[in-house]
Image 1 (cartoon, each protein chain N blue to C red):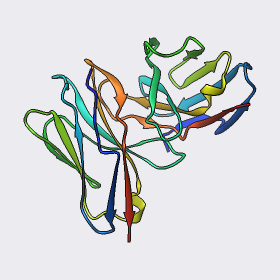
Image 2: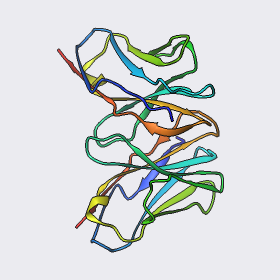
Image 3: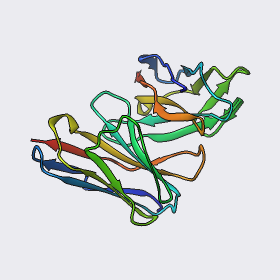
Image 4: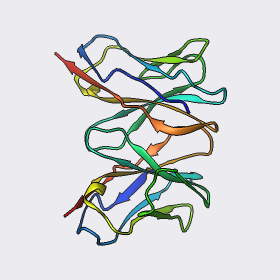
Length: 109
Length: 112
């Protein structure tokens, strides 16, 4: 069972890069790592998914070291609208679909 | 636009009175999920369907049931709601495999 651990909260100023790390020591060979963003009173929204090394899309980058026991979501130049809860999720045929506790990101001016 | 729709957005029910929440999708995804999310907590998976195959999480109370009459629709039935069942209920869909899930806006259930 791949349990994930994330910091409970983070603070950042607008325009800075934010890195949120997730620990998943028991990740299985077939598992993928997925990150979601959730605003209050809305459903989570997919940000990025990866298996190993680095994945980048138009909103974020995901860094996964060779041992895959952790991953880091990188948000470049955050804005106030990035204030949300960010969830790391390990999913695959071998792992129960369990959201971690989530990281509450607060962005201020 | 293809999407996941949940109705109603807000539902109030009385203690012990059965309630049904609905979810529909236009994405034609194989998999549909139901999550429960309580205030300031992460979503908790209740069950999911892979096509017609129902997969119940071990710790989901028997009070919670689900139906998927076709690819597009999925229902969550709470047979006898208790005060502790007040929560946001989220429906999500995905293609088969570890693909991204598309979430609906949720139904906020209040139990009086």
